[in-house]
Length: 167
Image (tube, rainbow, N blue to C red; front, top):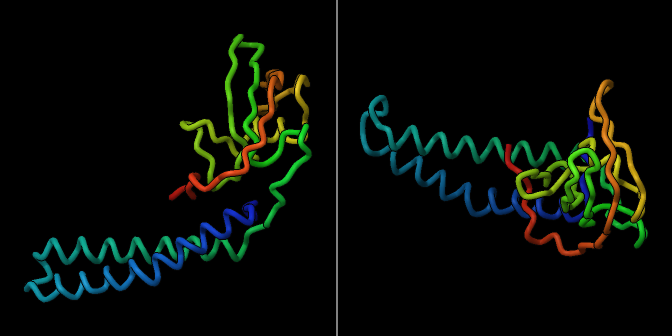
């Protein structure tokens, strides 16, 4: 399955790859060399920790490069009166008699603890393309769904503080 990314996501991922390759990789390689010189490798904790960090960095680079190769770049602009990418949406949950505010983002930036919901999540899918005042059914699975009412849509252009989630 291809991940849906915005041009901004692609740029952030490429920036992270460049940082990891050009700045972090040389530092980690040097650290491995230094700790290797400390003696017996079987009992050298610093060496094993340095190798682990180096391998973690290489793994992250491969992950990001694979994401970019297989990504489907999507448009992040929507009509002013419709829920779209990077919009902050205030929704009323009828079942709970509660109001919540969420920002619609791509999967790699999704973070439910900070109210950043993915366009792939049930709520994100349901809200996309709808307008203020509409009552929307959110299908969680084959046996459960619930209704929300879109109360307010705010276009949030600046996503510079959003980070790409690490796995």
